[in-house]
Image 1: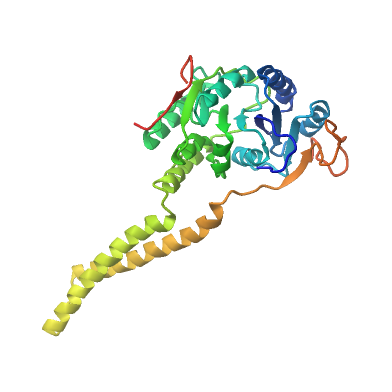
Image 2: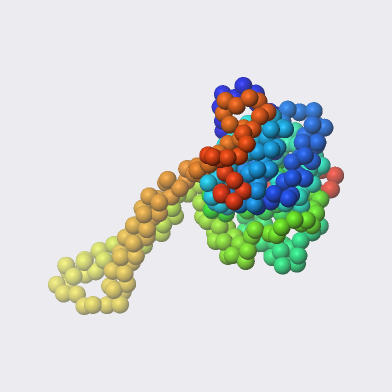
Length: 349
């Protein structure tokens, strides 16, 4: 998180965007209207995830009209998790609200989400009970949420809803990479934060099309395995593989010591299936421990939050408040670059 800012808002609205110029043109003014109605100091942070549709020009113009709007341009498309991770480090508010840029989320829900944080929750996840999407997205999403709820023990209806409100310390604790944004409530709960949900309204997409293809189903399943592996009791890969490896190694050595004693007493030793099994146990034990060591070496740098290369930040540092440069040399161009009535805390069953 940025430190040393002379002005820190209470609320940060974080919007990751990829080729959503038509939607952003309507969404940003609507978000500002709602934030101003709350009477709280606020900022809007848009992370452009490598858009090529004119988003840069649009955001440059908005930065000139809204002093509290900041735009962060990643050098290429890294994915939603990367955009959120970058935005979390840039946001300065005590509360952070994330919402998608496609106009399917309703900014009027922001005050209710903030009220739930004021009420004691650390993370409030939106629940799109009536989802306005094609059946090819709604039914797989229901199955995904059902499986995730049963596997993790956290009874939420909509894990992957992009409309969420966080306390700042939750965002500081999250480590997002790959496509881990689907499991933010799980990651937060495993860190000890209080997680709840609130039913939010959902609208049909008006512009463009969904950016997630069929690969999200396989990626989602693999990411779920990784989340459960990495958050299960806070064990490292070496602990997981090392325990099994040590068990196999001890059993194999024990059997081999038995056969060594037989050889010492009888003076000879016949090759038996159990002897071969003992040798295999020793080999497997050494392999499991070796895998754990290699996984620990790989996981150690990955377990730290990764930073993603940023092309440009608007407004430019040192520029007059509320002003934004015209796009030209050195700047990216559009072609270059819970329950109704209140939230309820959810606990595992």
